[in-house]
Image 1 (cartoon, one colour):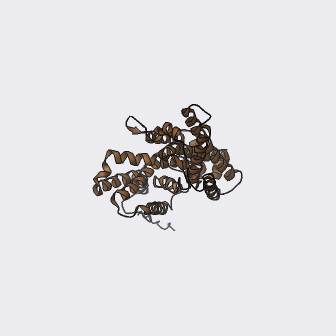
Image 2 (cartoon, rainbow, N blue to C red):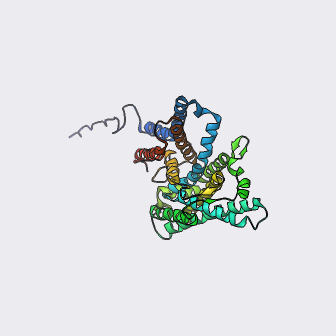
Image 3 (cartoon, helix red, strand yellow):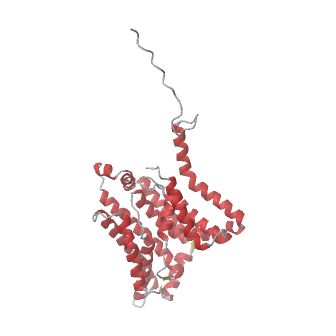
Length: 345
């Protein structure tokens, strides 16, 4: 008896796929949108800002936006490593406040005994970077060796850091001595080749972060841990050491941002660095880094930080909504991007 004829396979679009569109083509299109989305959004925002208020496109305003972006952008570079590795840090704003207050107290204390104010400033800067690295090290140890979730650890230190600053300031402000402030102020207000120093520092930190993330073994390990920590352990990656180093990197970035921020006002108070953690995390995820970890780009993070600053600047110039709602806008942006990323691994 002859075998029954078999029916030919029927080809057609897979579920969720439009006719005439291959899965590979759809994937490439999604990747392209993901890569250029933040930059395209920034360009459209700049066009809208210029239309709403011509003062937006002036050189002074653009430099002001970029300078104010530098603090959050530098912290966001470090936050990118943490989020890619599958972690989070909610304490960076409070950490910056405590570093600023401690730095000012140290410089005020030694300014009378040391003859050179330049030496005082140098010691203060070194102390700020050391303190940031130590705070990051403490976070890394508590998370890896203490086996505590990053959210819980950094939520706890958020309160600890700001409480100690409030205690040191006695509820007020800690102000830098005038003699030291005059020497220190060019770190924020100075410029090189027409660009303010904070912008140069942001560019250097972004380039260094991009090279480390994409061109070094450490950067590959960070992405591997965020993709699948258990597989990374099976591959003989020293997961705990990489995670600790990642939080140290973020602490150093907070220290650098604080060094640039202190000469701006010359003081630290309980409101210093308020909501910086929200802005840094928003910059990272708006820039395309996956909240679940495993992938991300430093360039996207910097674009995300600038994009958020542009939104704030447009709101200030046009009064579309109250400036007091800037944080609410950033919160909405975080929720929307998180919703769009919900299916990403």
